[in-house]
Image 1 (cartoon, rainbow, N blue to C red):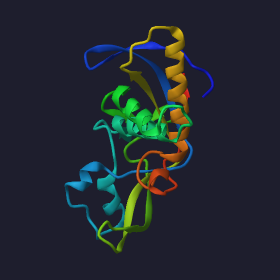
Image 2: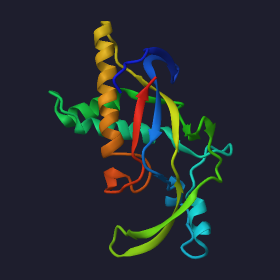
Image 3: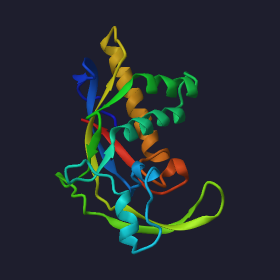
Length: 204
């Protein structure tokens, strides 16, 4: 987290924006829950595998993945935990307004330098509280360690000096450090009082 890396120019939504290449390294297993499961009926009966399989998140090309917006949200929410002269809500809003993640859709999970196949997951079973009260036993796909992915973080902020650009990278690094511990990624992450999806982020 200490090195700033090289600021590059990235094509983002038809524009060139400054940014950095990063590598996310998982610290705890990642628990998946495909957002599409909110709009389709997920089996509550059957084998644990039959219940977990519809919740797998993949890139459509045979690899496990997470949506890019999940990393963006995690980083921006991490801004709320920073010790900064800028009010926390204002800093978090600033990050949401300026930060973009590339690739724009999917971040393919990798293990030992290779994409993780969309069949390479375990099953996690635990009791889950329901929004309207009560609880149910749920089975969800779990990605064991090691897991990680590469991405680019770009920001839509003009800089008048190299010092301002370096300051932005430092702020992002600090936000990522807090986000990896306090927010996390996936289901039952630290932000949701869970243990899964903790990570560290390295600026390349």
